[in-house]
Length: 139
Image (tube, rainbow, N blue to C red; front, side, top):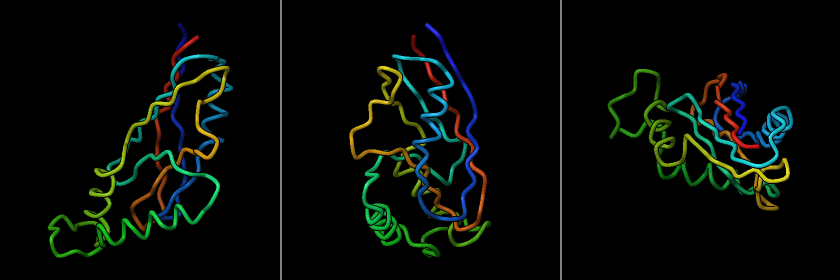
């Protein structure tokens, strides 16, 4: 069994989703692992990882509209506001989604469905650089 681990740094231009599937394909190709598991862990508390539809961009827009309604910026419920009105809502959004993902690998490819892509979902408005630990284990 072999292992590969690296840090993927993704620049984000504020709130929204970025498809990182191609970045992960490159990491998997570089590892040389044909069969096993690809595991992702985002090292932040105000962004998350999603597997979501990659064909229609309206899906991402609809998800953002839903989260904006569910966890609005500036909600007076929140007391943790030192970094602005989107600070605590970003933490809640991250808690409701995922900070880790595991994806099976077969024949050197992630076993995603035909309409699935892997996304980094930024929950803050400010630009940032997000770090994702990519661990691949297999043969």
